[in-house]
Amino acid sequence: MDVIGIASGKGGVGKTTTSVNLAVGLAMRGHKVMLFDADMGLSNAQLALGCTTAFNFGHVLSGEKTLAEIIVTTRQGIRLVPGASGVQKLASLSPLEASGIVQAFSSIEEDIDFLIVDSAAGISSSVLTFMQASQRRLIVLRDEPSSIADAYGTIKVLINECKLDEIYVVPNMVDSQAAGRLLYKRINDVCKKFLGQPVQYLHSITNDEHMLAAARNYQSVLEFAPGGNAARDFRKLAETVDSLNVTATPSGGLQFFFERMIAQKAV
Ligand SMILES: Nc1ncnc2c1ncn2[C@@H]1O[C@H](COP(=O)(O)OP(=O)(O)O)[C@@H](O)[C@H]1O
Ligand SMILES: [Mg+2]
Image (cartoon, rainbow, N blue to C red; front, side, top):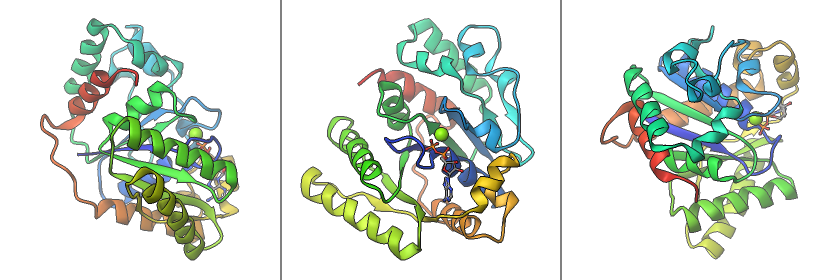
């Protein structure tokens, strides 16, 4: 199983869009995908996947529900773990709560090929916790100064403080693949020069007006406009992610993710 954390620094650059469409794209390639919605923003993964859930991770933390009870299967076949504000508590769990969650996740250790974690904006300790617990990190950014600065700021913390690698850049809302590649090159040059470590490139997502209409229809753009530019790019992104080597997970499965996540604590 591959655990992929999605971050950006700045909000509104396309983390949730990327998480959802990557999840759908991998599911369309025949993989079993779980999406953990750890972004508490307004336009969350549930809306984008067109499903409403009665319960969320907060209910698991409060003991009202088991993890198995809150996970839903979306019509795209994705196993969705609905987030909510309770997720913020993950950084300050008592050991008893923590072991309870690890147990809960190990009990639903279903056959999952990819676990995708959509994180909130910023680089709070909980975002960093998710990024550390992931096997790879995708940094979504746009070609605008504040997004570039925030993406770089995030990468800097991931490299300097968290000592992480497997950091991949996904330029979003670009005019062309060439423009996206150029944006990647610019940020990679700065990373090599000032952080002494390169970041990797995956694929860029073109600015596509279908995205807005897809959101209004509570659909991923892969479903709503499969012939459009963004859908083409997300299919390629999923294909590229699919071709990455999956690193062996010692204890395997979801249990591994949560053990690591809980072991990390705040940075
Ligand atoms: N490639 C794109 N083309 C056009 N609009 C996009 C694209 N990617 C994202 N958007 C739009 O940008 C807004 C923010 O995206 P979202 O994924 O919610 O960002 P985040 O999760 O980083 O806050 C949404 O309205 C989304 O539909
Ligand atoms: Mg979001």
